[in-house]
Length: 199
Length: 199
Length: 199
Image 1 (cartoon, each protein chain N blue to C red):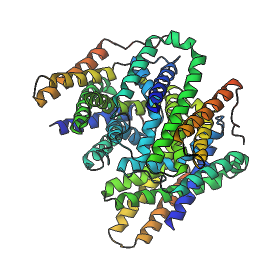
Image 2 (image 1 turned 90 degrees about the vertical axis):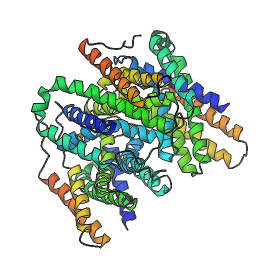
Image 3 (image 1 turned 45 degrees about the vertical axis):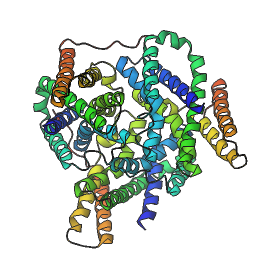
Image 4 (image 1 turned 135 degrees about the vertical axis):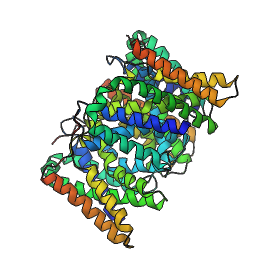
């Protein structure tokens, strides 16, 4: 079930990756690269850091096919997807929630500490977006304006906190995802942002 | 023989890496970094993804020495090399063909699927150029305008396709390289490009 | 002792990482990312290249806590730290010296050649700063203007050279650090720079 959600999140991230090429005159190949980087970048970075190589998509062809498929569909149907931008923001928040839980669980299953697990949850969720922004613009937006990593962080901490008291993985997964998803949506709705650096 | 071509391609990529610093006011160290990143970036990324670490140049000092040597030569002789820009484009297309085949073969020899092998061929060929562009300009040119990865992709697919029918590795290597090389040169000659994102 | 210096260097690099966000409107999360990337980027890249995974900070929580702590302190106290910019340049030179020796020693202890060891010393020292610059501005400053990697390189070479004649690791560590530190400070004091690319 979580694997299906993961593939769903991968597709959503690939779509948002391609759409980030808007106004930047990327060609088909550039858009596919953006789709790959956004959808698989976070998990790849996590696996490399933890030494879990070959990385996850090398032995599971499904991820690559999904990214290819949705990158190409989005490329040709960009005019259509751009109209769905509000829906995509919601789906992207959902993808963030899924990726966070998956990064967290993989890290724990490899025997790492809770601190590393939370960090890997966040890294899995946000790294793809940071590299996408780096490839398409000067300074990554995700580092400047949005409550994005914060939502991922809260969901990950909630998972660990509840795990101390309840021995039901399904419950923890759902709770963590709801918290990440809700915080991200509330931040979008009310244009919340973290404090900026002042000096 | 392929190893010699690989060293040749490494030298060419180091030269084009240093020349990319043109108009950007890079110093000697910055130029050497560009040489390294362009020449060794693709293979390094491939090895890290596949878990083939330490990466290939750690235990083969030849690559490092060649990159150092040609980066420094290019730095001091930039005025000369700039005049050779047409020749360098042709040699670069040749380097792309070599790197694609090497990435493909290494991936197959590690027991990966054909899909991963093709992907690794392309990654070995183009990643160095993407990071070079990222370090020297805002948005990588390779993602926006050129038939570059496409040539690498076609050469890699040809290798796999022919391998199903002919059991002669030398033939497959030469065929794959000719296809990558030819497509890249034709694209350069006629200024071909992939379709751009429209929305 | 060297471990304590390492943690000290990590704290200094985290501070300079956060301060690099100046004028760029980074939020709290963005500043923490800059702290992490600057302080841990070099060693992480070294470990990934050498195949020493999980990377060093996964099993030593101290690094992460220090980066977190100093990133947040610097974020809220940026106005104070900006006044210390001269002191920070000196401490940063010291951190560079420490990181160079640590990268060098780790590489040697894994059985790599002296050439690779010198390279890994430099990579450990400068990669964090390059990624920091990439995230905050168009073209990394470190590739264009400063005697920074050069200082690291000279310290690393000195270590290897002296090791041939003297069998006293403590002496080599201190000598290497003094050389890196001194060259960096002299370059800062007299605004020295490497030659720029001409063509």
